[in-house]
Image 1 (cartoon, rainbow, N blue to C red):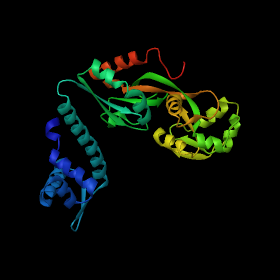
Image 2: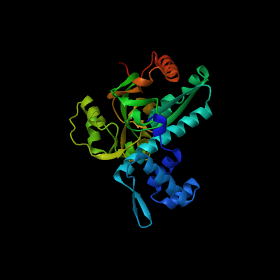
Image 3: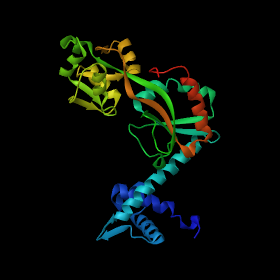
Image 4: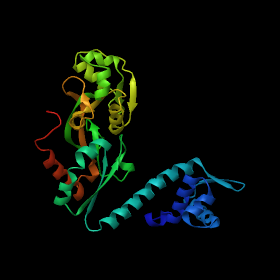
Length: 301
């Protein structure tokens, strides 16, 4: 059997995906602009071609078997890849495309202001960006590269160190007037704002300032954009990367509470899978970003 002859119909795969998401043949038919009987025929043909029971039929209802659910998840990822491939072709048929996963705040504050220079140097390359907070599997997405914070230890990937990071405790002026701080240990009695991607950041900061800290209660936030708002509204003290702290202090929205910048454990990296290393668009982006970061850093090495 050839690869082509074993490929299921895309109509059948679309019907399966719609059924898995909507849990109803009627709803799937409405989404696909087909009749219920047409969707049912496509599902039956898909099941017959694969030779695996995908559906459980009871009375007038149809649901997915365990095998059908697993297959539907893989089909959904495949359909997303095909859709994105078509969009890339339509938006930039002649040039290259780079799909880049970015950290929301670092991507917006550090990368986006620089991108016009990349666009002028490489007008034939389209950069598509998708914000992601945590690690993900490159094999299960259409991302070509990612901005990551950590040690650059993605498996089977190359990593380019972009910037180190140092942090400062920041709070609003009104908050500090009500709760003045004279020494680092005073912060132990104040509400601390934690970022989920840096679970040990406050312990590291206190240790760097000679304060033993075991349990540090406080509220947790998933993004720097939300922790910034919390600090601005006087909810507590946030430990912010220096590139954010500089902007907040310059704008008068937050003040440095106490102390000098303290190094973070990790750094910012550009990471990409080894199998995409020779992609022209990615090579152009890597070469450009190396020139961008030459001679600069958020933290001395």
